[in-house]
Image 1 (spheres, rainbow over the protein chains, first blue to last red):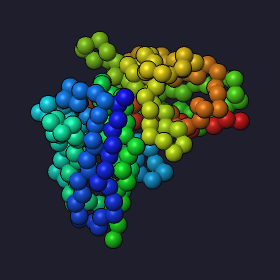
Image 2: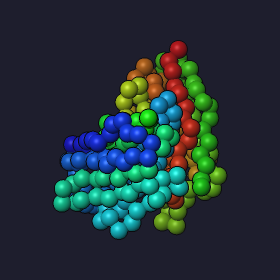
Image 3: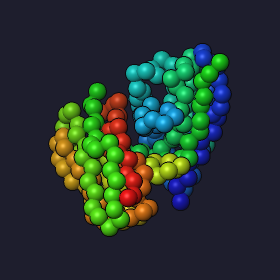
Image 4: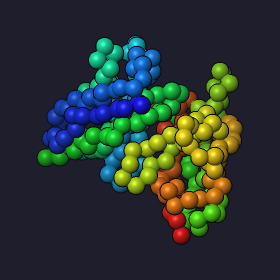
Length: 116
Length: 112
């Protein structure tokens, strides 16, 4: 059974940093690209970033480029999202997803709140 | 950026009746590998999104056969042949042809 467990969310001040983690199990982690997708309160889904299976390809939406860094540790079967220079508009539930063409399985999400 | 437009915004359906959601993209989602990178998801109340259809018309594991997807190029449709109470939620289309990957705005399905 595929399981994705996000952690690391919380309340952070504008300009601050947070690192999200996503622990994966139930599949060969190193064989799949992974993505982060977020959902602001009461809003729709928004793709944030993706990383290739071996980590040599990374992609970001324009609004997070230069502030967010996606990475993975295949030996630990873990996906990360390092977020810095956080803004109020980054407030959202962040989901990690196993990708097979598109997001296939999703975690339960972790809430990031950026507020003073 | 490829813009995905879903219609309608919401749908109220009597159980047992059909429902249809449309999704239009600003450019063709057909790639040179012959695949069309259009996906459908449903987010049920209080839950994470879950995959319904991949590459336009392929039902994901465990998805009931009352769900079907069709379309090509820039115009796509998700159909529910007979809506059940458990189908309530917000339905999203998504393109993964090129980054930034983009979602439609969502269609909320309610039961009458």
